[in-house]
Length: 212
Image 1 (cartoon, rainbow, N blue to C red):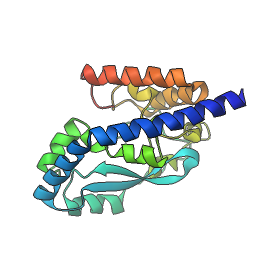
Image 2 (cartoon, helix red, strand yellow):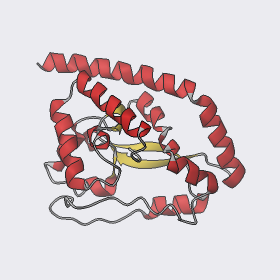
Image 3 (cartoon, rainbow, N blue to C red):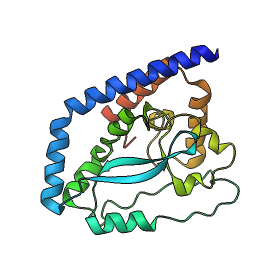
């Protein structure tokens, strides 16, 4: 059973490399266009890099297209948020990313956030091996520091661009439901399950059910 899982993980990594390369090549004109628009409106840098918890709770830099003004972006990055839960993250907790009317969001930033284009650079993370195409979404460190032993089990696999939780709900899903879906994925991983997650995610996007 262990050798079968190792084989599937090797195939999964190969798929990640091939798929992310194809996406990055095909979407390179989009990357270039967005980079030019960001620089034209608010200068450099084009990308925003934020530390997240990866497999085994090892931290890595998650890439996004920058959508906020330079000063505000790095003020927020250094300030962070403080959570002090003692017995795990509450089930009812819902992470808030901020209002779309935030005056610190640049004009092109509103567009890329609306269509989740700010997430596209994460295919670079997939190519590097920090992430996978399919897996639990990478959580911010301030939250994973508060995880209970059960919640930490979601860190047993690489985080993904989309996961079982995102394929089954909107981005405002509460933490309890997210953990439940993520742990189900961790315990039941196989390549067919990954294909199912991918197809459900595509359906979510095409039906316009919100960010995944």
